[in-house]
Length: 198
Image (tube, rainbow, N blue to C red; front, side, top):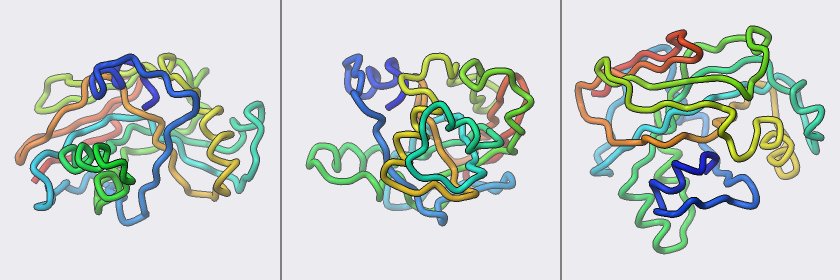
């Protein structure tokens, strides 16, 4: 919940959380190398959520925001797939989100690009195309909590390890996927993500 306009499309209010909203996905959720995503049979609606993904490169705990940039070395575009019908049920009952967010293959990753390629990680544009049509656009300048702030916050609770991946939130424009669709994700005009839904 790191982009105000997305929070409005979910809750019909411009919610501004006082702290980052965090949940975890297990390593079994990772889907990469352009492999297809198969819609699971336990949900009637799976939504794409396009996000900037940051790769952790150093072991870290209690990281100060001013030093957080030292702890990641690459970024990409990813998809946080969400079983939206399950999420709505869980939210209504005040239950955790892990089952609707952390199921197998729900964390799709594009090709990583070194951060040194970019002058400012908080000035990156990314977008998602489905079947050649742009369905979602984001600009990291619109984040409610900057990348370095998220890293500092998470590291208060969990030790960050080399290879950990931080999905940084999705902008407005999420929506459902269906069998046969072709998804392509771009960062600063470069295609980093390319896969099909089965």
